[in-house]
Amino acid sequence: MPTAMGHTYFEQDLGELLLLPGSRSGNLELRPMYTFRNGATYTGQWYGNMRHGMGVQCWPDGATYEGEWKKNCAEGRGRFVHSDGDVYCGEWHGNVAHGLGTYHHQQVTSYAGEWDKDLQNGFGVETWEEGSRYEGEFKGGQKDGMGVYKWADMSEYCGKWRGNSINGAGHYLGADGRRFWGQWKGSMIHGQGVYAWPDGREYRGEYVNDRKSGFGQFTWPDNRRYEGDWLNGKQHGQGLYHHKDGSCHLALWAKGKRVEWLDDSKLF
Image (cartoon, rainbow, N blue to C red; front, side, top):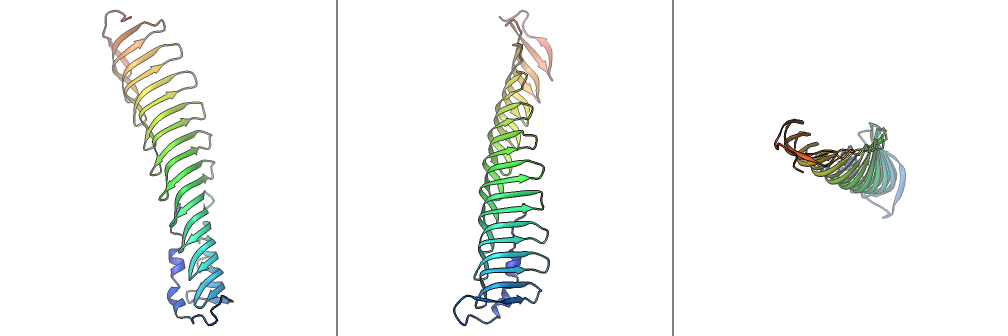
C-alpha cells in the first residue's frame, strides 16, 4: 500500500510560516482561516506562527488533514485524505503514521493495525475487496512473522511469512479439503512436508519449488504405496512399489513410469 503519507504536504509551507509573527499572548489561539501562497488553507488553533492544537489543512490538489498538531507537525490523532481518495485515520508522530491506524486504498485494500514511521509494523489486518484477508505480523511494510491468510474461496494458510511471501513452516487448507503441513519458500512448498487429499491419498517427503523432488512416500487409499526417489513431481530413480496384498517390488522409474523391475521376484 502507498506510504509516505504527507511528508511533502506538511513541510511545504514551513518557510512561509516562519515569516509569520510569533506568539504574543503565549496561549493557544483560534484564528480565522489562513490561506498560504500556494493556495492551501489552514483553519484551527495556533501557537504564535505554528499550527498547534486542533486544525484542518486543505491543499490545492484536494488533499486534507484534520486532527491534532504540535509545533507545525501532525502529532496525535488525525485523518489524512489523499488527492486520489486514499484515507489514513489514526495516530501520528512527526508528520508520519505512527501507532495505531487504518488505511483505505481506493476501496480495493485496507489495513488496520500498528504503524512505525509510515509503514505497517507490528500486528495488523489487511483485507481486499474480493474477500481475501491477512491477519498477523508486519515488518517494514511487509507481511513478516506469523500470520493467517484467507482467500476468497475460504482456502487458508497459517504459518510463517518473510518479505511479503510465505516462508518457513506452515499449514495450508484448501477449499476442496486438500491439506499440507510443512516447509515453504517464496510462497511455494519447498522442503519436508505432508500433503493429504480428501480421497485418502497422501505424500510424505521432500519438495522443491512446489513439486515432489527427493525422497518421498506416496500412499493410495487401497493400501498401495510407493517409497523412493522423485523428480519434478514424478517417480524418478529407484523405488519400492507396495502392492495391495502387502508384497512389494524394487523398480527403476523415469518421469513417473516404471522402466524395469530390479528384482526377479517379490522382495517380501
